[in-house]
Image (cartoon, rainbow, N blue to C red):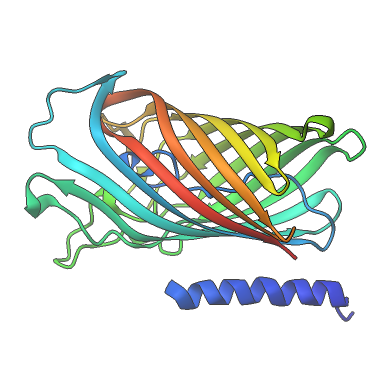
Length: 315
């Protein structure tokens, strides 16, 4: 059976965006992945049938201070000065039906560096493709009249390579400098939203759970639970202010059945965001992450700040 013009057009757009990204430059250890490099978009619900949404973003994150528990650590001799990464991602969504949306996410680390006081230990070349995710989102309850939506999602994380990245001298990159977990995983999401049209205000809660399997070296990244509360308010026509409070709980990593000592954390982040709509088609967003609570098991390098800029377009 031949494809409909709408479906054929959607397929061409999806393929084109994916190829462009590969031509441009065709969860990770904890200090550098804290505040995992998701995009800046707050569009998380299901799409209308045959609608395509493309979101591309760039994120930079910087980590500096060591914590033991909920307090900074004074004992940082021979530790890293800082860690930082620059990451670009692409998210593509397609409305299969009124209630079902398919989503594909992928990204690339331009750099992922752990800068030690001893330059011999510093890894500067942690760059490459991160894990990708294929996700199906279903609208459990979608009421356009009342502007209420409850959506659940289930998906698969997969690596582009199962082999951990190596340094030029042939040794394995440190865990904190690798761009990928090199392991498969499972993702589950649950989102609820309510729009108050009279006040030009929208509030929603998003929950995300990730379970990672072990890689070929029998290293397994800990389970991750993220709960986010968003409030979006129109300031002037086409210009929106958004505030997010995000709660992250990361379980301990496991190596060959044994828990790793300096892994596992509880982090809360406040994220103000500005969003502007261009001609009602393009949406540009800018956000800044501010950690407001840190509690780390063992001794770990923790985030100071993170910022991201994104561009979203519906077709």
